[in-house]
Image 1 (cartoon, helix red, strand yellow):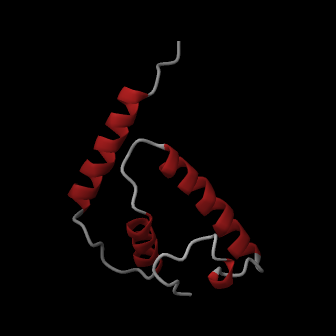
Image 2: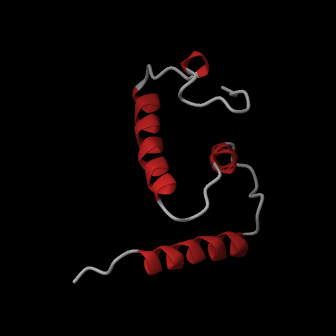
Length: 88
């Protein structure tokens, strides 16, 4: 299923049906991941995220070098650790 640019959950006319266990699990897990990303302090681009998921599912090559991706993720984690209050 290819969604038109800008189509999100508010546009249920283009939403994929959740009529299988795999679809329902994928949706639930995707929501959980997305909530963590959207509520965090790291910059988040949903279109780039979806691109990465589709590339992995299609077993395509990565668009960014692995070392660059590791550095970006490590930096976001380090930045988040600075923002979070420490637990006693």
